[in-house]
Image 1 (cartoon, rainbow, N blue to C red):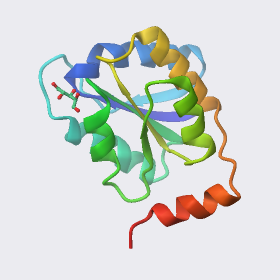
Image 2 (image 1 turned 90 degrees about the vertical axis):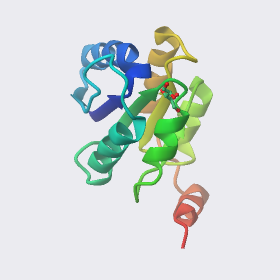
Image 3 (image 1 turned 90 degrees about the horizontal axis):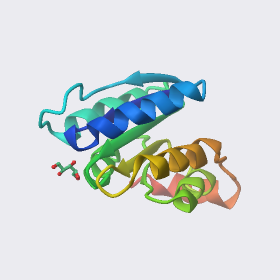
Image 4 (image 1 turned 45 degrees about the horizontal axis):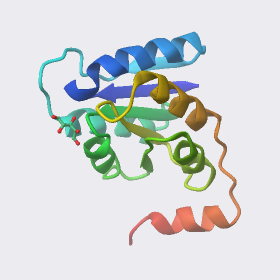
Length: 143
Ligand code: RB5
């Protein structure tokens, strides 16, 4: 899959490990930053990744900050993005199956990298079930 990834300083180290993991799994990954452990603002990175996914350049995005909360709130402001904060594998699978999520968010200060890898694996393997879930996903867009 083509994956856009990004983090703030809180997720910087974990992002490097997740990129390595994704490459080992034969995915094509583009890193949208941050590129150092220096403090930065998570909305800047979240919007870049979300815009790239919304533009159709990537199959999905992965965002990491301290809790995963800030990046998920920011990414969900971009039209067409359904960012899901998943700190467990069941939520990751269901975010795809029921919510047709296109951006996975995780908290590096909440999770260890081993669990983050399992969550990424569950998310990428998840498939949207459509049907009644499509109707609900269509209703998410607030008019
Ligand atoms: C940065 O200290 C922290 O606030 C950020 O990584 C994230 O957890 C925000 O939601």
